[in-house]
Length: 258
Image 1 (cartoon, rainbow, N blue to C red):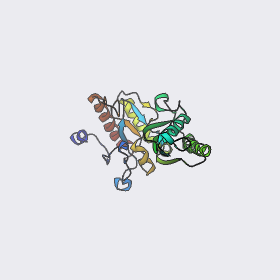
Image 2 (image 1 turned 180 degrees about the vertical axis):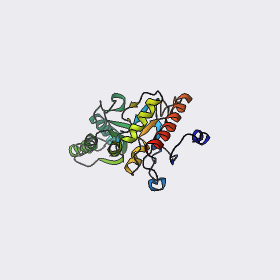
Image 3 (image 1 turned 90 degrees about the vertical axis):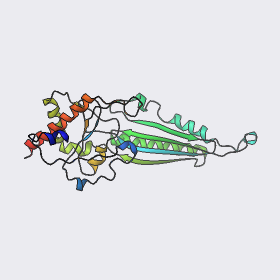
Image 4 (image 1 turned 120 degrees about the vertical axis):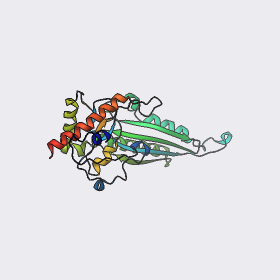
C-alpha cells in the first residue's frame, strides 16, 4: 500500500485490502462481507517460499470421538469394568496407520489425531480429516463412522460416538472457472524473475471460505517458513518479493481490464 501511494505513476484500478484473523484461530473469514468488500476476485498473501502460487487446498473436517467406560473398584471389576482408554487404543489401531501427516505428501490425504484425553470412564479423541479429492474425503468421514459402528456392534452397546463437522472445502472448484486470475500472477512472477511454484496447499486458507462465498481467492507466497512451530521465520527479502508481485498484479490488471 505504501509503495503504491508513494509511486502514483504506477497505474492501477480500485484495490480493496482486508486484514483478517487467519484460519488457524478457528474463525478465519466466517464473517467476511464479500458484498461490502466489492471486488471481483482477490488473493491471500499467506504462502511460504518465494514463488508459491496455490489455488487448491484440502477438504477439511474435524472428528470428535467420545468413548464411554464404566468405573468399578479394580479388586471387584471382573466382568463389570469397561476401560474407555483401552477401547480408545483399539480405535486408534483401526485407523489406517500409514495415512497420517508424517507419512503423506502431495495430494495424499490423512487422519490426524491432534488431541486425546481420558480416564476409565470417558476418553475423547480429536482428529482432523483432510483430502483434496472430495470423494476420498467423504470416504474418510464414513470410515470413522464405520469403525465406531463396528466396535459398538462387537461390544453390544453404544460406547463410541463420533461427531464430524465440515470445516472448509477445496477452492479449486471455484477458482478453475476463472483461471485468468491465476494466470495473471504467474505472468507477473515470470516478468520479475520468479519461478512460479504452483502446487496444492496441504492445509487450509482463508481463500477457501472466500471462494465459496463468491470471491475467488488464490494464495500467493508471503515468505514464511516453519509455520506452527517455535522456529517460524520470514526473510525480509521474501516479503519484498511478495510486495513486487502485488505491485505487478495491480499494474497488469489496470492494463488488461481498462
